[in-house]
Length: 109
Ligand SMILES: [Zn+2]
Image (cartoon, rainbow, N blue to C red; front, side, top):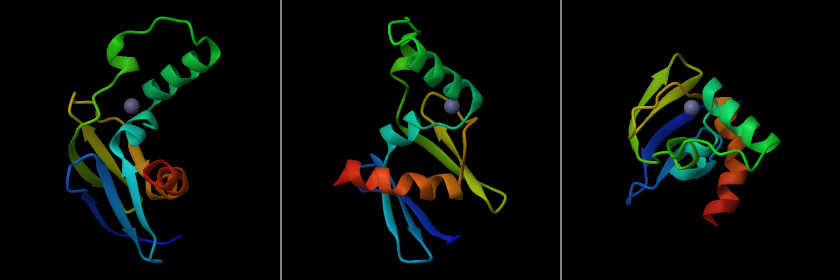
């Protein structure tokens, strides 16, 4: 498992840029990262929507804030992203972020 070397926002603050010890340079659009939030309540919302796409959910759940307000390392295994609306329960492990790197690359290409 490669280590994370640096984490930074891109120039227009719309994507998180991670550089890994094996030379991988990954750009993750913030909208995409928020949509992948690994916390229990966001996973729950995604599951509900997958089961019943017509179910009406509160708009803050459907169109969550995608501004990044802060990044905080969590141990040696991941980072906590704090969003503009104060949501900060999602811990993105480095393993998870690496798994997302390919999908993120396709989005930003
Ligand atoms: Zn969440």
